[in-house]
Length: 463
Image (cartoon, rainbow, N blue to C red; front, side):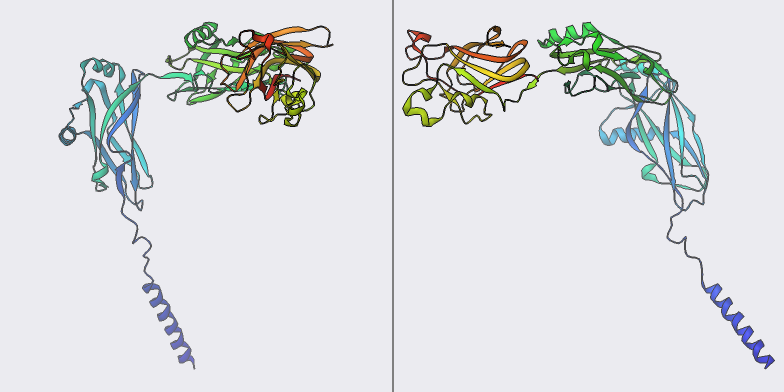
């Protein structure tokens, strides 16, 4: 019995050992050996900045199982450039030796590391001088292995074309704002607007700069573009000079410009309507330069009125309507159609026997409004309309009227017209038609009356 237990024990040990030796570790079989390659190879621009001396880094990667150290060397390869010129019919010359230094032409990447960098120092002062020669220069470089690690041949060479740029600070969106910042009474009394400042490089030190309001820049823009933007009043904005710096390595930053709405629009008595510009200029920077193409920003602030709702307005008086003639009553072309927000319906003047001009409409806006613009919309049919000239008046009591603007239409074919008026307050609006394009008797003129139609009368302002 004892012998049987011993036999079973030995059998178990034998089977266990057999199993252990048969389980060979194959985990690494499908993973490639370490290889070296340039992240970017072939012909490429080397973006360098005019610092006098600029450090350019050439990145190298190591991929594979991570079992090998890489000992690499970077060398100038004139044959590479000659080959490139022959294949591409180009005439690049090797960059002169005084224009660069291979700061690190030897590189070690440990077995556990996956990348490394060669460092090249470009002498930007000498490179600047080359521009006068009218030639093209390049730096052909090859990475070679000093130990047994393989460098992938298709990713071992690079031809660097130095592209010299000035290191600038700039507005991210210079010139006139792409879209205006519209201000309304619903906005807070003051609010901040972000303005982005940026550099085209990473500074190694803190950058301090100055931004100032440049009124001359606005004058230049208005003159060059036949515009009439207004300068944003000093009490309608605030700048924050304490924000005017970029930390080392920081390429961009949003600065705050505070817009003080209450000093432009402040119900019920302050309505400084207009299209304003806050002209900002970067005037100083502690290092390097200011981009001359992006040193100014014209921040567009639109302090405009809006189209007022006419849903409860009423035409309370008028002196000519086609509805005065019995056979046209069913057409329903009455004065109230000027306020119904439907361009398919319209008012028509007394038709078969027109009254002498002028014609007028008296509109009750039901509350005091600040009126800044008035618009007319003729019916879509091109032969309708016929209004040519007139004026607008406003009143608070139906007794005292103030003329707020004349209007004139130059072509009966145009359907929509908007007229600026003197910003004025009042409850009642009088719209007067004094001239037409054609009359019942063109020799007599307005006294003979005119046949005309009008779809809508719009008003812009502030409730």
